[in-house]
Image 1 (spheres, one colour):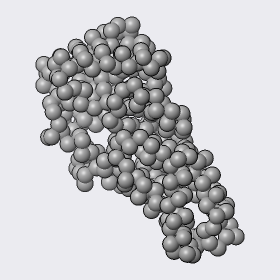
Image 2 (cartoon, rainbow, N blue to C red):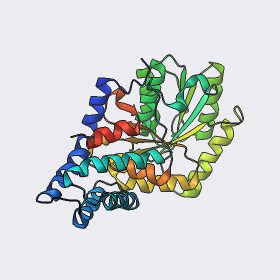
Image 3 (cartoon, rainbow, N blue to C red):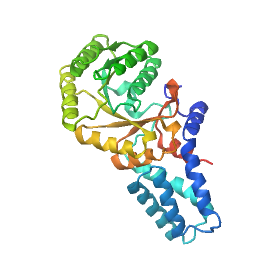
Image 4 (cartoon, rainbow, N blue to C red):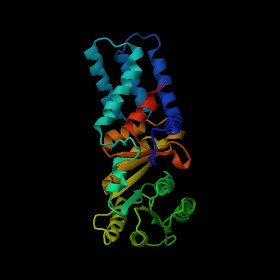
Length: 323
């Protein structure tokens, strides 16, 4: 079994449960729309558009989906409303398949985390505003890598918030991996420097560095992340190998706004969307994937260690639209 045994019955049940609120929100509304209707017409599509937007799929992405369904209805001439659920599932799946989202292999391990092919150490820089679950995501990632037998080192470079340093230290103790920290109000780049240095000394496979969870000003954020990158590159010129943005799915369109702000000031090449289990706004995953064309690697569908799941678009669509 792979570390991310995504297709296990337990994982699938967790995913289904985590998306239950969003699924119920969509299907309950669709059911009310099609009552007394025999075919998918303009009125039904207008209602469907409102449903998708209210589920935080996003306006532009919703319009794309509706246009696809309109073309399909026009092509087939007559489409029964009872087929609407299946049509919606198929068109969302097709839209996601066109985006830059990497599916996982049968083992459950993402393509980019097939550690046999990764540089060693692999440096992962994690960014995101306070409260999105950034530090918890790092802890859960560390747990999953450590469980797979990988050497992991964490760096507490979010030095503007005391709780962030303490929280990461607790995760390190819980998981059993070292945490490099200088305390609060210290230079984040110095923490990053020492983290990479320690990771190289101990032969780490994965180095994960937490960063300040503040947008404060774009210039300061850009300068801060730029400095961290420069000091890391003194050891590893190609590092960081990945910059992951963590977003809170329960905030809906606010998550989209955060993604826009961060992508303006730094190169983001992976996304994690958390807290989907407590919201009816899970459609935001579809909109974010469509707008930014950045791989969604993980989704949070519960509070347990293993409830940070590798994102697989087909499994996601299946859970979201399964009756």
